Image 1: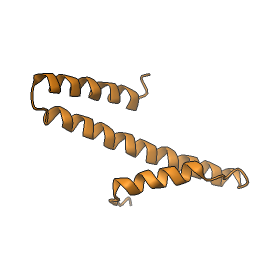
Image 2: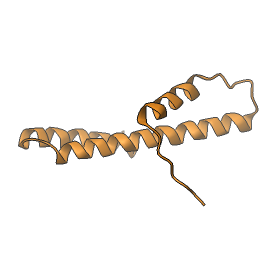
Image 3: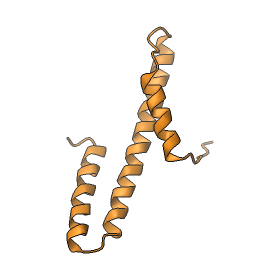
Image 4: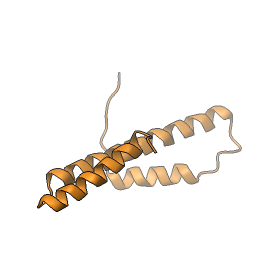
Length: 85
């Protein structure tokens, strides 16, 4: 059973930073793979949050030009999130 938890964005960013900078080269392959997997999922979650924020900017835009710019940024983020670069 999966249970979702909420953590503040600053904490998510700090966790990613710490895991990215820990030297685990001396540990077993299993630990290295687990760390890489966790880091990948956390970065994926962060990108998903950024994509949601970019979409919200389209909806909350003040005028047509701002909406267009927000939409272009969202589409760019979406392509990057889906690995289309």
